[in-house]
Image 1 (tube, rainbow, N blue to C red):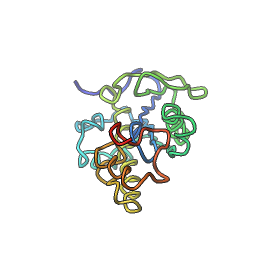
Image 2 (image 1 turned 60 degrees about the horizontal axis):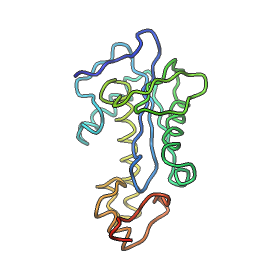
Image 3 (image 1 turned 90 degrees about the vertical axis):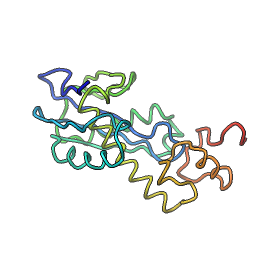
Image 4 (image 1 turned 135 degrees about the vertical axis):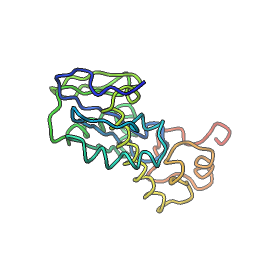
Length: 197
């Protein structure tokens, strides 16, 4: 199934998606992307279905060809304060704030969203595998967040964030068990497995 360019043909639509919701460490990052009407790219897909190399290829193409894009970041301290769902919505709001062009409709990946002031939105389950603008946002958010985690890895190499990007792998949890957590870990998340507690 090929991705659709638009939900509504005559509106300025911005696709929105986030990366890092299920991680134990690092920020949640969201992107918002408005694509031109003639945008075409056969490689573009949900970032989870792409290899790292494919995402890295797409990233500069999306940035160059998008009418507008924004990337919003919410750090782990805020995630612990307002929870991950609200932080994901906040990151999307930050991303929309940074758009140079005001959208008339937001296409949100997922089934829930907190309304952005004076802009309608449509929640689309698995939207990143249905609409180009959401897929483009998923790629920007993923590449941007991976880059953050790669940089943080140099500060705390024992957690292997360059490989797991903060997700709860066995090695990541083993490192938390052995060395404790860091300022970049989400304290309200279940950092250890049941058999480690």
